[in-house]
Image 1: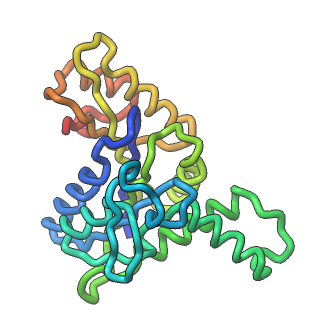
Image 2: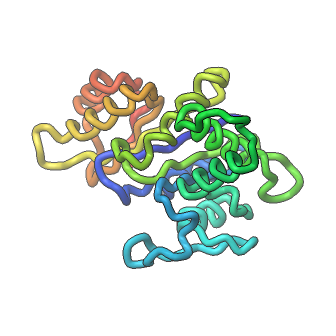
Length: 240
């Protein structure tokens, strides 16, 4: 199994879900079996009780799970059927950890974010990634989208879990793709992207690919500047 992790910086609502879905479609067209997982850092167990004015319309999966609309994009772009397990929230993670503790799974250990919460997150991602999503073929690539914005306190335990996953897997089995906003009309239009990538790097995550949301194509000068400050190869920096 290979993983592509999609994170976002500067502002929320950048289009990470469409970016993740589009990458999945490109890979599917190359002949791979692709699945998707959406991580939502909020403490709600699911999106069913949340206001659509704040979070957007709820998308209901075939098994009745009430989820983020991004899972609808995944299903339509990839022509797959996802389940409740493909939407991971902080509420689900903490609920699972507490249930495990009450059942005595941890045998008297002091329950902590590391390793208990982060390991539960990794287990949930692994379980969802290996579920069939169409015919009987098992997925070969899992695209994991982390909701929210890099730097939010709500997503720190997920970033740490993903960093641990990266350290356990062969280097070629996990790729980090960061979606960021490129401000137009400013001399320092790359600075917000520089800062959010620096935040990721401080957390031990080094993006392999940058996808920049912009209203104009970036210049070669801007590409080289981002390459210098973010340590991402120029050929891995794209304008969307």
